Image (tube, rainbow, N blue to C red):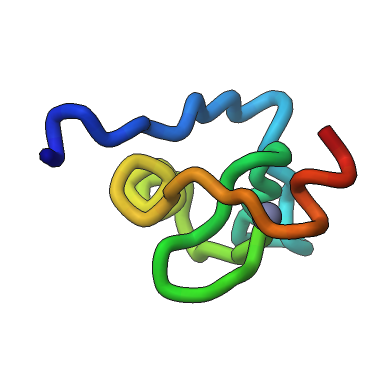
Length: 70
Ligand SMILES: [Zn+2]
């Protein structure tokens, strides 16, 4: 089952914004969300942390907001 799970196509230039002097904000593209909460944006202290999270914590989303903005 995990092998067939869709993986978020992370694009640092498109999806990541700096969060002040240090830290990063990951803005998921529409159709994706974080697995443990119905949110599409999350902040991280390091880029390594962000990359790992994008790989393991992001799943497909079909919430109203995503559907409307597709
Ligand atoms: Zn959504």
